[in-house]
Amino acid sequence: MTDITIYHNARCSNSRGALALLRERGIEPAIVDYIAQPLDEARLTALVARLGVPVRDLLRSKEAAYQELGLGDPQRTDAELIAAIARHPVLLNRPIVVTPRGALLCRPPERVLELLQGI
Image 1 (cartoon, one colour):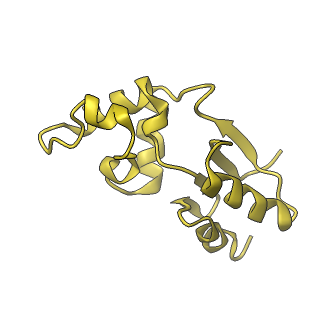
Image 2 (cartoon, rainbow, N blue to C red; image 1 turned 180 degrees about the vertical axis):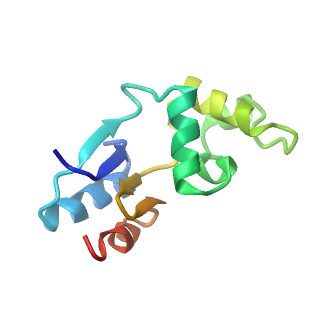
């Protein structure tokens, strides 16, 4: 059992790159394919808290659903944004890597190395 998790989208080059960097270092993380199995609002809320960033930082603003749902509106609450991600998982920016040292949006993928220091 690993203590490292990657929230992964295999179609994303950044996500594939972060996973490759982990594997090159002999780490086989738990892989969460959040597109195939979307995270519910509670798990998303916990993930955002672990990351310690505003929900808006995790939104993919270039996705069609972002525009269609009006998520750029600054009046939208965090709860509304999280609900939108739960319904449309493609809106979640990736990859997100969680380790005992913390959690990080790994864009570019080399950011994953920051989490591996001391592991």
